[in-house]
Image (cartoon, one colour):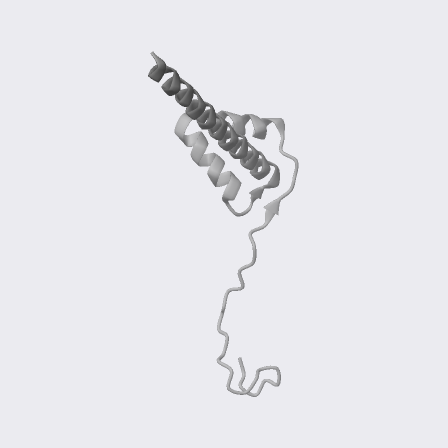
Amino acid sequence: MNTNDPQTPYGAPPQFGTPQYGPAPEDGSVMSVKAWAITYLITIIPCVGIIMLFVWAFGTGGNLNRRNYARAVLLVGAIGIGIYFVVMVGMLAILGVNSIRF
């Protein structure tokens, strides 16, 4: 970088190889049946599946279809767990009230 360069403001520090990072490229292509089968097989492995769902859902880059699928699976799972806890608390409350009467 030349100090006599008219585009460089006077007194500005020189920019030597400053990397310009942008968002990771996203793959919006359609996934094949083979890719969906592999995705499904990975998700049914107990611990690895949950970890991979979080990686696919919140990681940068990757396929948009897989990311949306992972987010949907995590959302439906969270709603299911929430409903389960509400029902369990309700049942325990009912059982607790009935056990006092006897």
